[in-house]
Image (tube, rainbow, N blue to C red; front, side, top):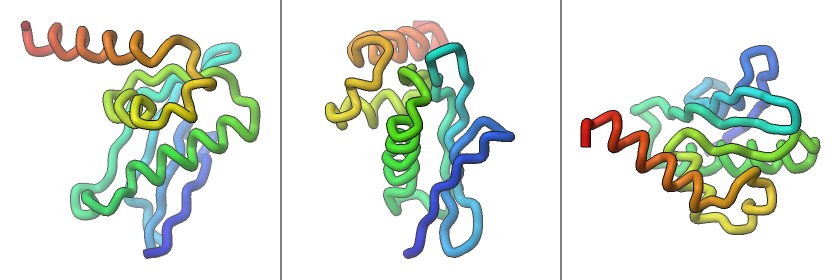
Length: 113
């Protein structure tokens, strides 16, 4: 399995490619000194191959290497991924517990509960 993650700055996202075809992406928005990861998806035909994890690891590595600012995880996948990877917490704008709480609040509001 040959994967490649590219930074598509024109579309404000990182893309993961598998065997020459795009199979997923992580969208972000930028604010001064911040990068907000707002959506992550992998083609359902390719789920279960750890592609989202590879995508996030390489995206976060790129953010770190290029001093792109502090990370604000908005997407629930990114929140959970960063929670499981404490070595990334130095990049967070706010503590990971704040992102987890915000994610839970969004889910509660979305589902009326």
